[in-house]
Image (cartoon, rainbow, N blue to C red; front, side, top):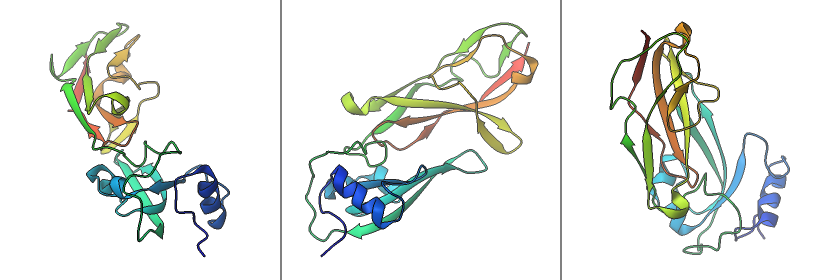
Length: 198
């Protein structure tokens, strides 16, 4: 008899978490069920999820500002369903469909570098889409600024466009945007935009 359930459900997710000694999962770890279809998608394989079954998954940002993935296979399924009924919201971790994120307007399209006067407000446009559309089209954005060799998240800059309400000389530098899909598309990073003081 297995301690792990063979279907995607809240009760089974909780049981898997309990056998790991962390209730339904810790703040840094998510327990996720992956069916045969999800296991075959390239976006999931890039995250280290390579087979059907129960997985412990988490992400972290490395010293260079890149998103890294850690996946631990908790239980292998030898005869999984081809495409299990989804009862848990796991799409940010395990993609159900092959999602491609494309940048349709790079932040460097109009000018690079961008010169901004101290105290001025400005917005640098960027746009992206996810294919296929529908539930795959919800994108998340995180702008980062380079400091030495490291990229760090810029607080409050979580929209497609980079905005300054009142530019300060300290805002000068190199920026990039990390784009993800809420249902598991592989992360895309924009071109580097240089911002300088006019």
